[in-house]
Amino acid sequence: GQNIDQPTEMTATEGAIVQINCTYQTSGFNGLFWYQQHAGEAPTFLSYNVLDGLEEKGRFSSFLSRSKGYSYLLLKELQMKDSASYLCAVSPNDYKLSFGAGTTVTVRA
Amino acid sequence: GAVVSQHPSRVICKSGTSVKIECRSLDFQATTMFWYRQFPKQSLMLMATSNEGSKATYEQGVEKDKFLINHASLTLSTLTVTSAHPEDSSFYICSANRGLAGGGAGGDTQYFGPGTRLTVL
Image 1 (tube, one colour):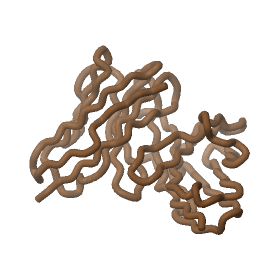
Image 2 (cartoon, rainbow over the protein chains, first blue to last red; image 1 turned 60 degrees about the vertical axis):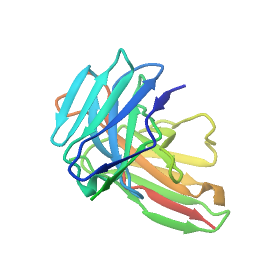
Image 3 (spheres, each protein chain N blue to C red; image 1 turned 30 degrees about the horizontal axis):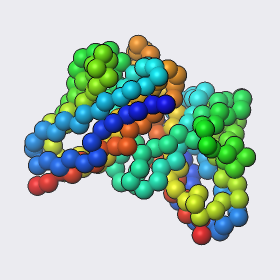
Image 4 (tube, each protein chain N blue to C red; image 1 turned 180 degrees about the horizontal axis):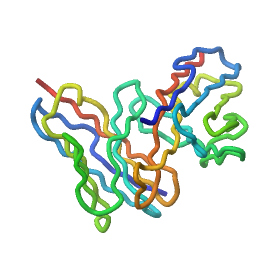
């Protein structure tokens, strides 16, 4: 089976930085994805990592270390609209995705 | 962009009835679509992989006779919940694979539809 772990909840202040960690143990590895999901809505794609290193996209960055089975999503200059659940998902060895339980981020003024 | 639509967005039905949910990729062709179910405050659980022109592949524990999947074209997949019961009430989300822009080292990005909230009374 696939095992993907991420913290359940995180709280941060508007304008701050938050780092969401994700560790995984999967039968194979074909890439790691981060999605954002607001309550009652479908997930939206944020980032994709398949090689080690940091991928930066505006206020969001994602890092991957395949040898450690570890990734993080970095959210900078937090805004109230960033309050959402952030899902770490791994593609084991085909086009399927296995999702972590999600990290609920609450941004406070 | 990659747009995936779902219809209906919300449905309430009586126990024992069947409900059909449509998933369409609007601006790209998707040979593979996925159906997920999400219970409150839980993550997405893959139910089945829908392949155009062939039978769907179901995940362990998902009843294929209860959740009928048809992938009639490269832009349309349907999920029919047959003889729905209150325990089937959930948020059903489809996704479609689209190749990463400029290629990639592997894997396709999945783009999700807006979801269908099913309530069975």
